[in-house]
Amino acid sequence: MELTTKQVARVAALARIRVTEDELPAIGQDLSSIFHWIDQLESVDVTGVENYTDSYPQSIPEREDVVNDGNCVEAILSNAPEKAHNMFSVPKVVE
Amino acid sequence: MTTSLTKLSLTAARDGLLNKEFTAQELTTAHLDIMAEKRNLNAYITETSELALEQAKESDARLAAGTQGALEGLPIAVKDLFCTKGVRTTAGSKILDNFIPPYESTVTQNLWNAGAVMLGKLNMDEFAMGSANLNSAYGPVLNPWRRMDAPAKELVPGGSSGGSVAAVAGHMALAATASDTGGSIRQPAAFCGVVGIKPTYGLCSRRGMIAFASSLDQAGPVARTVRDAALMTQVMASHDPWDSTSLNVDIPDYLSNITSDVRGLRIGLPKEYRENLSEEMSTLLQKGIDWLTTAGATIHNVSLPMSPFALPTYYVIAPAEASSNLAKYDGLRYGLRIPGHSLDEMYENTRREGFGPEVRRRILIGTYVLSAGYYDAYYLKAQKVRTLIAKDFERVFQEVDVLLTPTTPTEAFPIDEKPVDPVTMYLNDIFTVTVNLADLPGISVPVGLSKTGLPLGLQLIGPKLSEQRLFNTSLALEEAARFEEQVKNLHKGA
Image 1 (cartoon, chains in turn brown, yellow):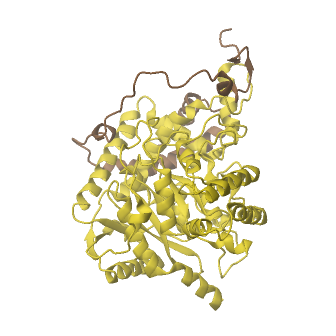
Image 2: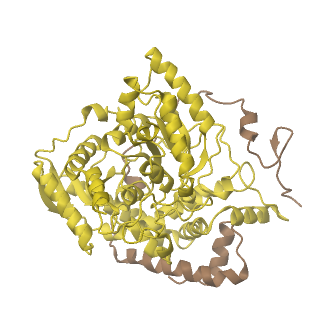
Image 3: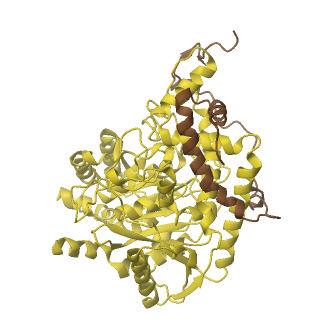
């Protein structure tokens, strides 16, 4: 699988990682060589094989529906890059 | 006196404290001194000497009162992937450079509840992605070992738990926590001549352990002896309602139950792990076979035909899960924030600046295999191959009790000879990654030295929850190999 610069730009945008125009070809080459190696999986016949996560025997456990945490606004905000009025402060979303 | 204290094994130091031969404060100070001496190895990102001395003082009081825990007063160190309340936790990343967790991981809480003393937080590949500890935002960790033929060459400690193994091998901690997603405990343990076990998936809680690939991540210890690793594992492991994949099983007292009696144990040798082995690794594996046979085990040839597909499968599943797990680093609630003109630009700037090149590469791989049009071809395909890999193991474990393989294809390599292309670097984990994909326990034991005088490890793999059997078989290997004696003879000969 070869990745075009257009595909690399799209993946970087989806991943929210800034990539400059002139970096695209090198990243494309790098990823293409990794996918070329991954493509050996094509030779494995998986007809009728379950997904690993579906075959997992352990069921998802349930907890009692009770309050067991809370009232820790200070702790939650303690690492905030910016905060105001006991809330996270973020850039304006709607222009 | 103080130097000799850091040479003790974890279990010997425990006995020394119980017999009042020295105090926890003396033991801790001895370690803090060595840490200061060996800062050039860059094993620690954050040293917590004040906290350590405070904890040691409390431990001495409990030891005097006879109310001590299983690890009372024993100085250990923590991979910087485990959240420690009030102590900076970076995961080796610039994006978490200023992150001070307001809560404690379950694994470390278990250690403190048992009375352990924390020396500091250990260096690691960023978000545990790497096999040489060259991907840390806090610089590479050096292997405490040097080649006899080229003593000036700086060697990698392996990764991602490079700080953990360097600290333990360099006597800067009696033991350490680590984590293993594709080999990150066992590969560096082999490179630095220490014991490292990745337990069964779900044995240790993932709560507060910063996520890389949640279906593969598992915490485990690094220690200098098999008994030490057994003690650490039984304290770190617990059922945790805060982790929905935590196993609800009783944790045995591995240390009290340990025995090197392996008579009648059926050891499997997977054919695929012996192909293209270097002469040195073949010889080492043969020694392992001879030691275990002499101890009364039987050897059986087995085949795991899906093994060659394990690494490519891993490099679909692990990046996919990583791209999802690392989406939370958006600069909004914690961690680095780099402003931009729009919200999207802020995300993009933050993640570009905050993540290193390997983490960005894996996020891109993961985003791609999960994106529309490629999800079936890559992600679902890999999920199915993973099932086949797990079935291979299920089948062979009907015939044998334990598998014996090399841990790594080579000895530790020099920093300046690191592979330039990512795929060659990924091949470091060729013998370890299958275990994570099948949720199995695997342990690496140092058993030999290369021609250049560097440590080499053998790996034992067992069925789910066979940790006791792995510790027992490892002890048999440890007793037969007498690794410490090999090292002493090497230095005598040099």
